[in-house]
Length: 249
Ligand SMILES: Nc1ncnc2c1ncn2[C@@H]1O[C@H](COP(=O)(O)OP(=O)(O)OP(=O)(O)O)[C@@H](O)[C@H]1O
Ligand SMILES: [Mg+2]
Image (spheres, rainbow, N blue to C red):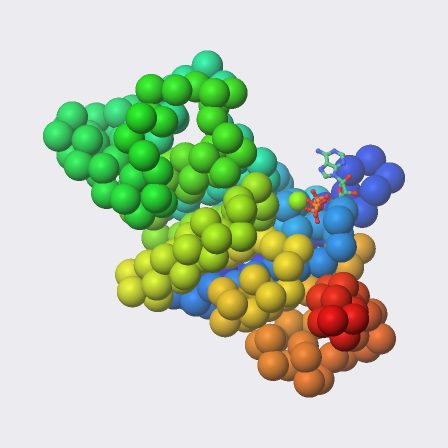
């Protein structure tokens, strides 16, 4: 669905992406993982045409993503930015419904869809009239997810969408969403710091380091065939805390 060819992007002296070649399969979930600052969010923005790369081309279903095509392509993509990115001066309801209203959808359609999304994201209707500052972090994140799903997009871009959720809600939403992605055949690109989450969602996992791809494949590949010591270290670092707790009891 996406094909990236030799994508590079620098911010002043800093190289955020260096010569990235990548294919993202339709109707699968691809997960970007890697240390803070390795270029995950930048890569998502390049995919959506929000950042123009210095070099290289992104193709979406064969169409080059550029200033001309980006606006139209973005309508097919739902995006949850890192931290949610809700408009602070709009209520939850307005945040979720904004694009649908802009596109002239009927009131009934909008109301029905919002109700579906409330059920899906496990949000109570009384949050709808509140502003983002009046919501908990987890509620904000679910409102951001509902907003991204509002237009039933073909592609979902989720930049650390579960960060502020407590473990139980997180688990519920993770399982619900995975079923939705699979059931509806969504193409999903997700960023996470959590290798467990990467394995849970990712048909394909891409590990980045300093703007380049270190390894890509299934969770099985990462655990059993790490391509170099960095990969091994990245995976074992996340297991150490848990293992040490279990070992200590
Ligand atoms: N608009 C910008 N201007 C300058 N530097 C930027 C900009 N956006 C990103 N960077 C830098 O590019 C690098 C990659 O940033 P990016 O946000 O893609 O990292 P990330 O992998 O998403 O990190 P995190 O896990 O912390 O969210 C970082 O060093 C960051 O400081
Ligand atoms: Mg990021």
